[in-house]
Image 1: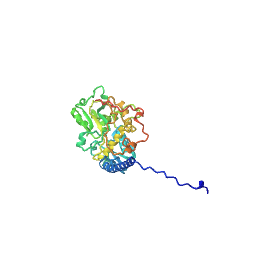
Image 2 (image 1 turned 45 degrees about the vertical axis):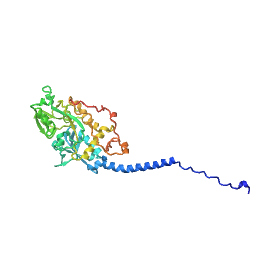
Image 3 (image 1 turned 135 degrees about the horizontal axis):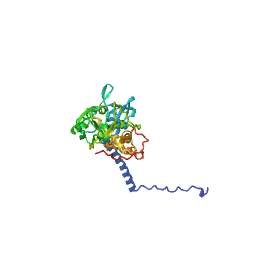
Length: 382
């Protein structure tokens, strides 16, 4: 065998360079940083969970709504445009739509909302009629003005306001041209009907009028039709529906008032400077109050959430032309109360405004809505 065919000796193996001292230090630091971060996460998460604000699910648990099959809501049943009960247990009005909006946020479908008629004097105690008796409702959404007396003396616990209106007066339209009502003082010496527990009663006494109290505003309107009182006073948003319902020209949106001997009414702007801010009474269930405020916050701040505007347009905005010069209600939702809820960063990205279960996935933005004129303040007649 020739020398050329013999295998030669194996060549030297290439040496793997040892990591430099600087590289080893960087690796050690990286491992140390990962360990420190892991320790911090393990330490911080229990602290956040223990002392941080509750999550929405925790609020639902605290409010006793987990697994609830229905939600009882006390509402008025005789206020056209606000809350009115029709045949076959059909309910319509601004308060009704606000109730559905809040129920949707709570995860309660419309079909599981039970509306129960509630009288004015029972709103603080949340006692509504059901059959032959009374039950305690979860929420009261019944044109209920927020006042310190109702909070401090009567025990009502209010959400943030959801509508701003003001006190006004209606008379029979035939009074126009003979007498002008530009202030409550113009009613001095007159019998004026209002709700028994209304904030209007004291103002009438101070103006020299004789307040006649009734449990239902429709009863006051009937007294006006019958000539037993000179005027009716309460919140403009409540009175507007009766004025609109008695218009001679039916444009397809006329309300059914259903009272005897109905006559055309005139709505008077009395220059009231005090705002009537309507709120939801949740009673002592503070977790439920926070959830209601979260729903109102989502409605006010989420540009894709038009539930409040839809309710206003369908029930209040179109009435304005029948009620001039009195403003029906401000077209802007009052500023909501911000409630802190615990959300992880990835939740905030996925759910930028507090999650709104029950919202329609096909909502259009406010800017894209036909006829939406922005959220500017309507003249209040102040």
